[in-house]
Length: 331
Image 1 (cartoon, helix red, strand yellow):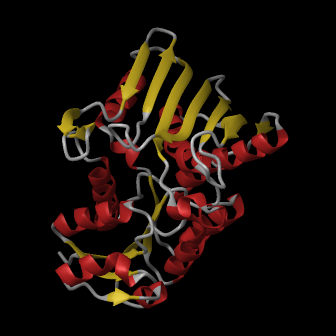
Image 2 (cartoon, one colour):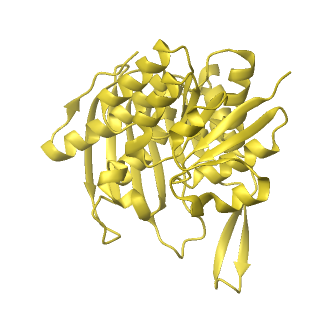
Image 3 (cartoon, rainbow, N blue to C red):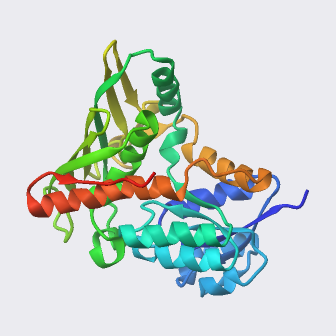
């Protein structure tokens, strides 16, 4: 069987390096090109592996690559995905899928029109604790879900993430989408109303670094997400993803990165947590490749990316208006 040929478009997002190393270790996969306007950013990969380099991603799209992984700044996701689809390439796009509802709809429709797959990068679905909790909910272990209290608190990433012209928003956009996707996945219900508040409480930056996003679902469930860049540089670990799922017959608590060792570092003069659990990113990349090889639908679609991001965008509307806002999710 011929190898799946995958190209990387932009290493602006740090996840690109993780995805790249996973691809390089996978049998039956060949990374046939890297496109990045900043050659210095990918120089080590080019020199170590002898991979062709393209300063313009459209040059990469002109090759016989089967699929691309896009890890650019958020505002470029849409155009890069649309161009890839028109070139007949399947796409795995970093989250958030886009920064407006209109452009995400265009991304989805263009991929469908050109018969290519569009997958959204939501690796949290592959966290072992999340997978186990999903199975428990489906078995009915805690009865019907009544409410969910969740957190996604991380370290402020800096760089283009805090430039709204490139990111499209701050912590609310960056950290709502992961947990919102899990909520949509767990409940298979539609968010109908969003209320949010935000602030810039921890850093001197031009975007918000903290937010509380409340969502009401059409099945009556309420969920709240603490979405922030509140982890300091001295904190032992970069962030968290937690969920407390409250049901009619019990509660499930998820601490996604609790599989860790404590390291007491004299060189850094602080305690560090080193995660030793299974790689959520590995599961994501493997599923993308398997979908291409077996020609079945990707498990996390463009619609999934739209539905989670749409809640974050509605949160911004709520913040501006100071009231709850209605939301219509695409099915």
